[in-house]
Length: 168
Image (tube, rainbow, N blue to C red; front, side, top):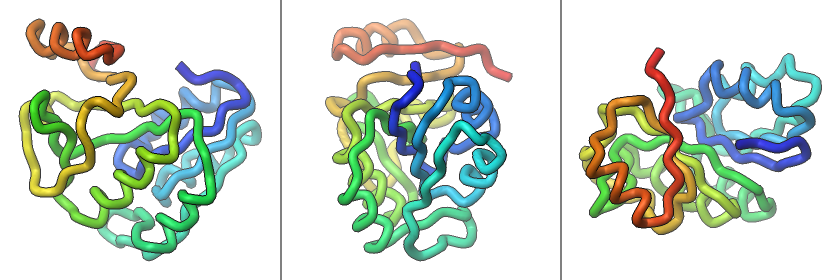
């Protein structure tokens, strides 16, 4: 999924230790994130060039948000964006509980050639107040086993690649 030399953007919601381990195996990469925790996970990986968006620190989520973060993103281009969402509905799209997170994630989606959504089962069919984006911008979904067949078929029909993983 990730090739050496790529430039990646990782939204704070999906910046997990497991994703950091996977990226560490991919070879030389450039990664920008708004997630303080995720940057710490990557800090010991010499083959990964780590950048932070900057901006106002949202203490609860340990993520950077706001105009400064958006401005830094507008000056960059990425091969892939990895993101997580609070809600994912096949009709309405991807949503977030927090307005600032939704706004920054929308900006992120405009800066990447491909969008990869890391999806948890509790997010399926859930709608939250703030729209992140519609599914026409999504290229790949990585989801745990358990997605119903009709949802899989709908995603396939829309040209979205679905990667199913085993739940930990």
